[in-house]
Image (cartoon, rainbow, N blue to C red):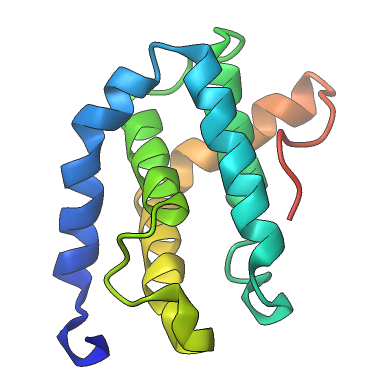
Length: 142
C-alpha cells in the first residue's frame, strides 16, 4: 500500500474529516476524549517519530483553547483541519498500517506535516498569544 501513498491522498483525508471535525468541535467533552486518545497514541509511537510530531501539543492546545472559547483569533476551518488530522491519527483506518513499524508512521507524519504547513501562521500566532498571556504548557505531552 505504501506505493499508492501520495500527498493528494493526505489532503483528501483531511478534507473528508472536516465535517465530522466541525461537529465534534461543538462538544467539549468529545474534544477532550479525542485529545486523550491522541495523547495515548503519541505515547505508543517510537521515539524516532517524536521530532516530526513535536508540534502536536501546540496544535492540541489551540484546539482546546478554541473549544473552551479562551482563544477566538483563529478560523473555525483551521481548527477543523487540526481536529480532522487528530481524528485520523487516532483511528485505525490509515493509508499505511501503523503496525508496519516506522513505515507505518509515514502517513501519520504526512498528515500532521501538511496541517502544520497549511496552518503555520495561525499556529505561530497562537503560540505568541500563549506566550503573551503566560499560559501553562500545552494540553497534551509528547
